[in-house]
Amino acid sequence: MILPRPAVVLVLGTAQTLGWGSTFYLPAILAEPMAPDLGVGVDAVFAAFSGALLVGMLLGPLGGRIIDRHGGRGLLSLSSLVFAAGLGLLGLAEGPLLLGLAWLVIGAGMTVGLYEAAFSTLARLYGARARGAITGITLLAGFASTVCWPISAGLEAEFGWRATCFAWAAAHLLLGLPLNLLLPRGAGPAAEPTPEGAPAAPARRPPAAAGERRPMLLLAFVFAAVWFTSTAMGAHLPRLLEQAGATPAAAIAAAALVGPAQVAGRLLEFGLLQRLHPLLSARLATLAHPLGAAVLVALGAPGAAAFALLHGAGSGVLTIAKGTLPLALFGPGDYGRRQGLLMVPTRLAQAAGPFVFALLMERFGTGALAVTAVLGLAALGALLLLRPAAEARAA
Image: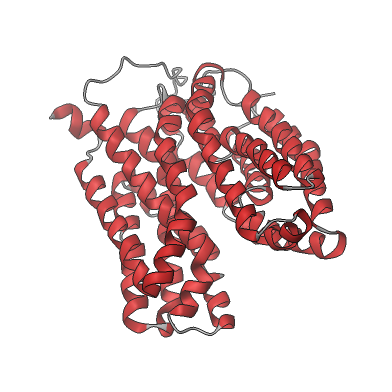
């Protein structure tokens, strides 16, 4: 059975929601109850989580090449088994050694089972027309924290953190695996009609472009800069808003606006910005965090909500750009390999973001936002140096 595109988006988006909510967003809920039980500090739990992010540096390019050659159904299905094994091991952990090992296994699953693998799968299925499908799955998975944080918190309060890990492991076997197995088989694009009515041609690996190195380096810098900031804000936003003068309750309320703002940004990309080249929408999105930082520094606590909304909306659009920009600039051929290579510096930046920004906050308070604002402007500068493929060919 070949699923139509809307069904593929629904299936893959649901699996992505489960994948993100039970892994990337898990430490925010379980780190504190987990740490004393394992005889470690909360910082050690987050250090193990950072190690999980670094696994992608090793496995990302390999996973991308596999999807380029064979399609994503098998690798995404395998990720469900890896997630289940890692979460089960985490629930059985009795000390720092098994804690670290469990997160390394989960990190392997994150590398071959989250957005990069999903984007590569969609590019393999739909070629240059995958942009709408990529936006669709990020819209669904944008609710991962909204849906899964309350579930994790409720399970932990009722049954403990170990049972919570086991429950998420079971969810990957009973829900995630069947969903991923529903994806179309094979390596070639789905046989969708083109606007002229002809079947879509398979995406083939093109010869290496002579001028590809420079745009790849620029794009790698953009993604690393953006995801350093995104991960840092995810770890420290409530405390940052408190340092800006907000009360703890107001800081949490403002920080909670990031998720809805991300979804709103993705809806904007799905509607109005869909008519623009992904480069243009990405350039606009990189301005959002620096503008929000300026508002927060200038206004203090009254600017907390505006900062959260601007940062969240920009982050939402840039999440889509991580999938659509390589597709628009280089085409669908060899997409998975490129995604794997582009994510190497991004994984480093994600792992470093919470730790480095914590040091900056200790020394400069809200002045630490100057660093992330400059990174956002530098990312904008890099995007301005990139040109759409048609312009590049004409040059």
